[in-house]
Length: 352
Image 1 (cartoon, helix red, strand yellow):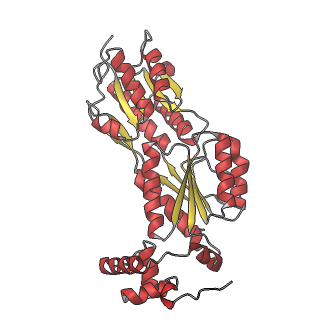
Image 2 (cartoon, one colour):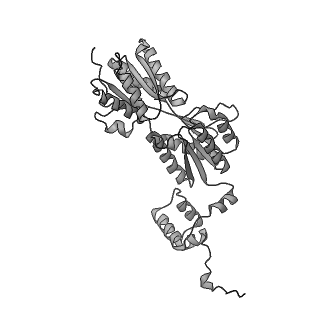
């Protein structure tokens, strides 16, 4: 059997980062920063590096980098509902900051399923990601979260309960939902409302529990009979929220005001009010928890509790980067404020 020799033109060597640097006329460090989305890279350098990489067919060898640096260059982000706009904005902001630092973020969606959450935790551990941003959906998996952190990779909690360990601080970015709910309830009480309903996801997770505490605190501070303070625990389905709101608004002593999470739950409540011929705000005052697109574009525009979702994402990314660099042991928690944005959906209740 004869072997045909290859002509030199047929032998194509794999382009290296040094080849890209030479072709672009810049340093290897500049190429690395440009390709990884790092800071302090001029538009010209980024353009020249991209053109050189395309011309040479250069592809970064992430496996080689992983063996060399003992890192993967990837971090995980686990949330319960990536379609929720409140989560989507957080994830987008975190991804942008991590990309600037040269890291790739992998997002997993648990759909509020504890078994799926455990599977995702195991998958993150198995792939040895450098770090993780997580929003646990259930306390059923507390052991899984502890094992994840015990694996050595830094974990930052997104607005959820933080496991208490004296020897292992869990960095977390939290939102002041309690004060937000208290402010919203206090505002409605000041308008004269006494029958106020809070529609929020269940109390087993921190945001719902904190909202309920703030809601009740406002009634206690005003020394008002809390009989009219109705807490309605909701699922995430809009249809469920609508059916629950229909039953609520059909009561003989129906609420004159509703505070509702500003996604599917708010949509369900507004649909229920429409189906019953109730006008907002004449018959029903409404406050959205979260300044979503629905709250802003609805007619009339909905008064809303607002916190910076982008700040949550960026703060979480910064805490994670500090841990990855070994510089973040001093700061472990960030508590972000909630503001009440007044619009057109709240008026004093009509006398009955």
